Amino acid sequence: MKSLDGVAAKLARLSNPQARPRVLDLFAGCGGLSLGFHAAGCDIAVSLEIDKLAARSHAINFFKDAPKEVLDLHAMPRDVASLEPEQLVEEFRLGPTSQAIDIIIGGPPCQAYARVGRAKLREIADHPRAFKVDPRGNLYLRYLHFVERLKPLAILFENVPDVLNYGGHNVVEEIVEALDDMGYDAAYSLINAAHHGVPQMRDRVYMIAYRKELGAVLRFPRATHHCDLPRGYAGTRAVSLKLINSSEAYAFVKPDTGHKGLPHAVTALEAIGDLPPVTSHLEGTLKRGARRFTEAAYYRRTAWENLSSYAQLMRSWPGFKAGDAVYDHVLRYLPRDSRIFRAMAPGDEYPQAHRVAMKLFKAAASRRKLSPKSAEWRSLRDSMVPPYDPSKFPNRWWKLRANGPVRTLTAHIGKDTYTHIHYDSDQARVMTVREAARLQSFPDGFVFAGTMNPAFRQIGNAVPPVMARELAFEIISSLRSALIPAAAAE
Image (cartoon, rainbow, N blue to C red; front, side, top):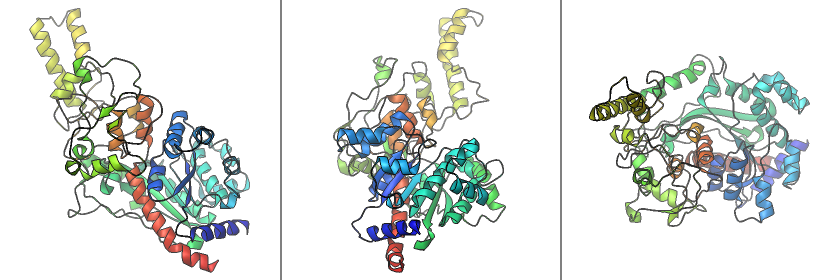
């Protein structure tokens, strides 16, 4: 009865069109999902993130106008494995637990999975610490635990495509079963962000759920852009969807992939072409060491009407405008590779890059008349040719095509940006932090805590905010449509 009272209280509050749904972002990272829901008119009430710098990034963006003690409270890293929902609600003074949160969003890391099912759900409900018994899948079990305790009206769950076929079982379908016992209707889909205005071909699984009392319509955003995905994406999708195609996956919704009448997917040129060129590495002024965000990089002198609509959005996102410059347009120190980057063709991968490097090296060795048996020959080769076996690392490098979206940005760019080499051969370099943020659809006024490497990692781990915004609009629309009849029934 208490949970129903909480649902009724939420319905009553949100029946006011001016009321903003309160969101809890679990496994929040720096706030890609939060930014999308913020843009859709939600109140990001609280987030939970274990990484210190990602938690601070979230706080300084969503609570930048709050008193220092409030900002610091939100910036504190927290471990979902050691914090109970009631503790979180009390710490942030969100009122009665049953009324505190309207929407839970998040993407629990799923390094390993265990079956949930109805027996597991009962175990979670009966014993809040039961997840400790099964460390293989504890993080998404904790996600379910927060849902069970807080009874949100709506849920958004995000994860990698592998979650649909992990060790021969569909984890998301099992989560849907668990949510059914908790009182939720749920559905999920495999969506590529390039079909929704993000300049990146990024496949992710999204699950939406609503309290059954609402009778809300389960639907996913319609495609806004057309994009023919490369063959590699079809192969990985086939593996992920194998169980869905061979069984009755009742909760799976086939995604809308658009049609040729829609605008073409946002290109790399449209996404980052207005940012100032970076040539410090070619001029000898770029040095080794941590990159801090202290120097302004001013936009190119481009008339507003000549900017792509995507660049305009990145510069003018409400609440996240950057002014005349950005401060994180910084890149890695890679003195060996500029000549290789310049000679690569758009779309080239590591095997082509290795051949280019060998050609440059052989020409240099010939000019110096070095013997292949000499130490000087070996030293020159080591200084010019990457050491990785081209037969084992075909996708390690990739040079962007200016006229298309880019490949998936991952957390690995925190260590290595070779997967996103700039398409402009005159700049002969890898991606900067701000360019990676643009390709992930973070607006220019969004600030990343820390230095270059952790900023890259935060960006790669995030849900693209533009994709999150499309999902948020759909959820809020369904929620609002269901609120009035549900409130009347109460």
